[in-house]
Image 1: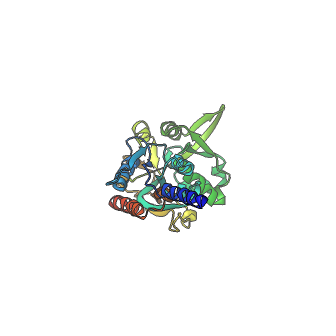
Image 2: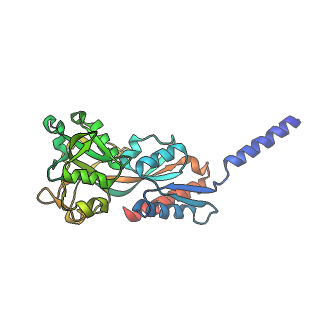
Length: 289
């Protein structure tokens, strides 16, 4: 009988621990002072309002790092680019909610390639490489596009440490790697409409143009919720961030969503807390969509 009482006490203790309210909510966002940080702070504050839970807003390198931190359990909720949410490992039980729209910009120098789709042509692909920033959402997209369309399989991607170095290579049309000159077609940049980093626009604005992404190969891709991952859109004058375009009118490209990825393990079966999560996410993203 004593054994049964002891066992019951242990089970009740374990059960109590399993349903205990978490003490912190770790929210992975983006660079310090950026929109992802502001958005994550607003959502996080809405979730923990009226509770004893402490909100920790973590600044990160963006979607790729956020996916890794989610998988490792270092953050409970994060903002990811939609294609990162379907190509990067995540916890087994997550909820993914659409946030604001982001534009895929194809940026090229005067000696580069004005349309991403032209890189399907073998003669062009053999001459030019793509520039990309290591760990960026744009690198996720370009690799996903190369994987999606076999015509890009031979494409070469040259990675840079930051946007300034990548923009410099795009502006001059080449970069030297291990003593070899590599011609650069251009690079992808992904961000909110009209919000291109000053690392690109300030020193290289007169040399870099906004081109197009004319390739229907990506139109059928699906996001984690089964909705279109990339949708056709145009870049108007307000969205060009002062850069000139290499086409007449508004360049054609694709847009995609930023998404809020929540690890369901955080609320530990607490229905009231789960409702707070849902309400906190939905109330904020509705205002920025």
